Image (cartoon, rainbow, N blue to C red; front, top):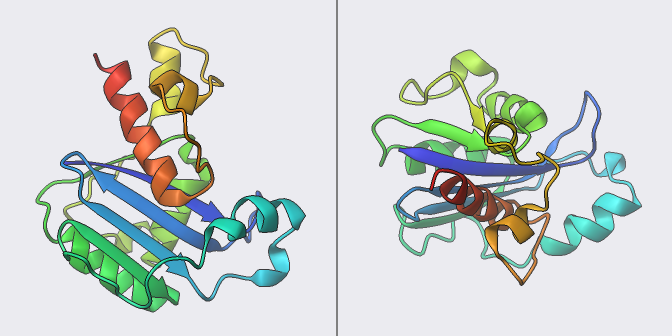
Length: 174
């Protein structure tokens, strides 16, 4: 099962902390986690305007609509990790796909206290559509929404961005 994911975090620096994570599976099941324990002191005006403004309008803790199809988890790292592990149990073998995954993969692994802590059914090598764009002869800096044909933007919401990544992947693989 391919899982397409995105994270939002407090900045492009080594000690950044997760604000949110969004994941969508090939079959459309979604997970959205919003962290309450990110380092608010690291948030500059851009993060506040473009990322935090899209947070906080979700359901309260573990607002499951259907645990396997849609999971919304709001809380600290331990709480979200628990909910994510439970959600991931519905899949046997997982490939993780992101956009430019330099930060996303490190933060995903850090959520599990390092790469050796990620669930064993997740393949240890992540993949990214940025490289796939390059391989397909498309400028990797192309607007993902424009490429996917999406006209309504909610950019910098982790779940929305994960869905855009999924749409780009399938268009690239056509």
